Length: 327
Ligand SMILES: Nc1ncnc2c1ncn2[C@@H]1O[C@H](COP(=O)(O)OP(=O)(O)OP(=O)(O)O)[C@@H](O)[C@H]1O
Image (cartoon, rainbow, N blue to C red; front, side, top):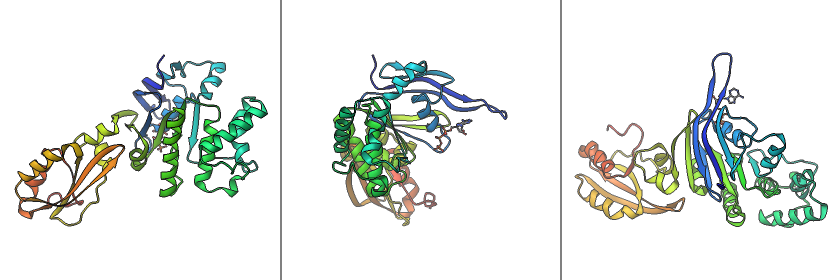
């Protein structure tokens, strides 16, 4: 049995009168048990369709979806209910019952599954504790902040002890500080209960902060994929560029450059060999568990084009102000 999520040759075509829409065009993806995987991509790339296929809300046109070794795509009505119970869903809009307390909202899927009342109470107390809301079970949604409501949403998604947590834009409605707390909670939940997490997002900061690996979806295909440490190290790729957002300088004589810290020696040797480049400032930060060095470099205006080419040749992610490249 293969644990986690395995998608093979997943294809989804929506037949429309004006011509078929190919929403997923042959997706192969494996997310091992306990991993946090991000799916990023522009609007229309196929992210929601992919989620709907994993939760069996949508039947793929062809290909297979396995969750912990069980074929979701081929499940019959009865199996489907059991398979769906293995998948917890967290959405941008939490959609709690306003007239029910946090505890009652969390207990709801357990009532549906006919879990006895005593066990329900026990489980709800465990879940409130897990999501950092111990003592708030009696609060109504209107008495909770956006972040607290999302905590209730996560507890509710985990109630039936799923093996997969699908998070569809889980933090898009939250401010930056609350986003960080919710992402830390998702990571903590993964560490404590070993759930496999798939996060659909359009925010690279979410990927940076919480994901172990990432796939970039473009017109129904995975065009870039890998562990965060690997994708940020790939030269000139879209994910590497977007995962290492360096502040763009408006000054044509300075540029920013980033590199994996283990290459510091080579990077400094390379810079030392390039005419007209000097290090002005530097810092190191950790990104998805990978240490990345950032440098601000002074570049002599008359050597600019050659210096930028040489820096890139040396494997640095170089960022210049828009319109400054040719200056
Ligand atoms: N039910 C449907 N019928 C027809 N076409 C659909 C249907 N659902 C999605 N599509 C099309 O499939 C493609 C992928 O859509 P999808 O919603 O999966 O993208 P997305 O990456 O989730 O976008 P967003 O970030 O805007 O939600 C789009 O071209 C969309 O118009």
